[in-house]
Each structure stands twice: as C-alpha cells, then as structure tokens.
Image (cartoon, rainbow, N blue to C red; front, side, top):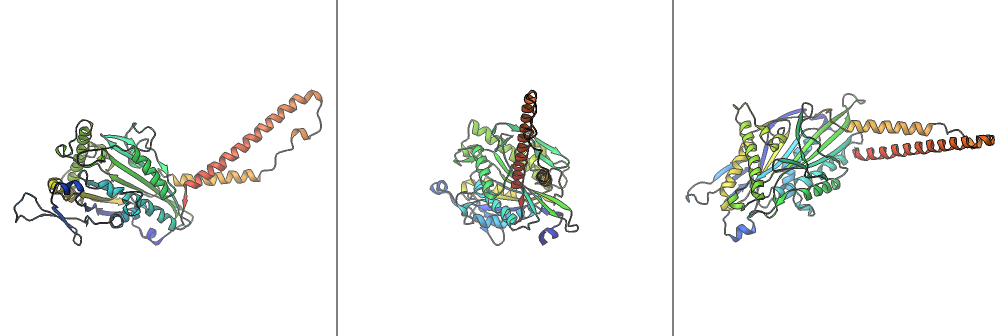
Length: 441
C-alpha cells in the first residue's frame, strides 16, 4: 500500500471548486464585428466583463474564482489544474464530480470531451482515462482493481442509456440507503485499458441527442453523464491478512447549454428540447440557491432528474469541480454575466466527502472469491484419479448382453463429454474473470 493511501483521511469537508474558461471570439462573431468584452487575470483568478452599452467610465463587473483560463489555455493544463486532483481522490475511494456549465456554444463539450483523435486537444474525460490506467500501472502488485463505466443522457427529462441497444427505453432514478441515488437497469461495461473507455465513449456519443441551432451547429440537446466506478482491493495496513475494498465513483457531466429562443432560432422539436433544458438548469439553480442559503430547510433535488442524479455532488458525499464556460462577444453580455453569477453561487456550496469503504454493491471481492473457487475446482479435477477402464476392455460378455454393453458405453461417453464441457466452461469463466480484475503494476 502506498504512503498516500495510508495517509488519506476517510472524510473531508470542502467547498465546490469552480474554474472559468473564456473561449476566443468565433468566426461568426468576428464577421459580425462584435467586440470582446471579457478579460481574465490568470494570477488572481479574476474575470472582468465590461458592459457594451454602459457609460464609458462605468467599471467592469468582476468575479473571483479558484482558477481562470483564457482563450489560449491548453487542454492538458486545464486537466492537470482542475480535474487531476479529483481523479486522484476517486482512486482513493472518494466520489468525484466534474461538470461543465454555460451558455450554448461556449465550449462545454470541447472542454469535457475535446477532439479525441488529436492528443493535445483531448478534453477532461479522455485525459482522465489515461490518468486512471496510468495509476493502475504504477500500483503495487498486491493491489487489485475493477473498472466499470456507464454512459447515459437526460433528454427531455427522460433518462436514456447511451450504451444500450434500445436507447429509446426510459430508465428510472431510484435510491437505496446503502448506495444512495442510482439509475435502475443502467448498463455497465468492464474496461481494461484507456482504449476500452474511449471506444465505449465513442459508442455512446453516436447515440447522444444533438442538433443544429443558429448559435451552434452541433448543439447538445441533452445532459450527458459518463460514470466511472473504480474498485480497489488491498490488504489492511494493520492486518496483512485482511482485505478491504474502496469504491470511488467519478461522474463526468456535460450539461446542455442554456438558451434564448430569440438567439438560437429554435422551433418545433428544438424549442421543446430548449424548454426542457432551461427548466432543468433553472431547477439546478434553485438547488444551488437553497444550498447556499443557510436558512433554507428544503432542497428541491427531486424537482428534476438532473438535480436528483447530482444530489451527492452538490452538498453531499462528493468532491466536486464546476467548469463555467463563457463567450467574450458583446452580444452575449447578459448570458455571460448570468453564467458568472451562477458559478459564484456554486463555489459557496459545502460538501462532505468520505471514502467508500467495503460498499455492499462492490463486485471486486465477489469476482476474486469466484476466481479462487474456480481455481480450487480445477485443481481438484486435475488431481482426481483417472476413470476406470472402458467397459469394453473387460472380459467379453455373453452375446445376449451386447445391447446393455452398448448402452453403458454411450452413457460413459456422454458423462465424459459433460465432464470435459464443464471443465472447459470453468476454464473460460476463470479466464474471463481474470481479465476483468486488473493487477497493480
């Protein structure tokens, strides 16, 4: 066990960390001669926004955050500064959430996913894959890992499994005292390396709901949540014979952008999608306000599927980072100010995160027990005495008993085939389970 794992606190109290990313003016904004109204102070974490229709001497509005990034920021720098500490904690058994919020077309999906086939443009989600399996490769050989992933979207207030063959099936949000809020019947896939995860994400992205608006040609029409569960089995520091399992859950959330119909030109189905997106984001805002207001006795988590799923991430058992993305164009002044005010409230939310020790829904210990049991059965089968000689090798029987001899022979052959088949099934199951469980180093 590493020194970091020995020293980790089982419970940590801290506020949600918030960083802001300012994208550059896009081609349409430059052609329309919109001015740049936003600047960032990288050293002090300040975003300043000037009112384009204000008085010349009117001071800009300023907002302070944990970290800010300008339009020249690099994807890997953003990951290392904001997401890496969260993923490190998830590998130690904490829950973690990283979510992007902002107006449509401000770069949320680029920040979270990036461009997968260009290494330097990969976003937070694919960079986390390399981070996780890099950690496993460096771990001690006595430590075992099991990595599972799920991917789903909330589209028009309905939950859809992006990895299911029936992606139109609507799933339910449930809650259990032992594991908290979860999505019933959500599929999960075992991942053995970063490539597995990227293939799973690519499969899910093909099924995700996107559409064109006047502000974004590939606008996300749903909130997407990529969840990674990392189980770690290691021997107790106090007792070398006792194994413990820690389970870290990482939610990587790409929220659909807030929209104004007058700017997106949405109509028909796009307008319906926008109204549902704005409604869930409004509920998220109400939850944030209630959490920040110390006098509020009721937190309206149940008012939307999004806030229900993010219940632990906001004010609960999670380490959480919010990425607020903003555009610098003068015609988006009101939306930019709204996003920054929203983000300012979020950083006042206090979470109490704890290590998930020996959870009831862990699969790693179950798989390891099955592996040991299969090895024991195969070893016993190998040590068994050889079967008795074939009945036909014995002394010849009277001619009248020949049909009986043939029947015994057939039964013996069938029993031998069953035994060989059972042995092969055990070998295949053992190989499958051993592939699922990753060994440190």
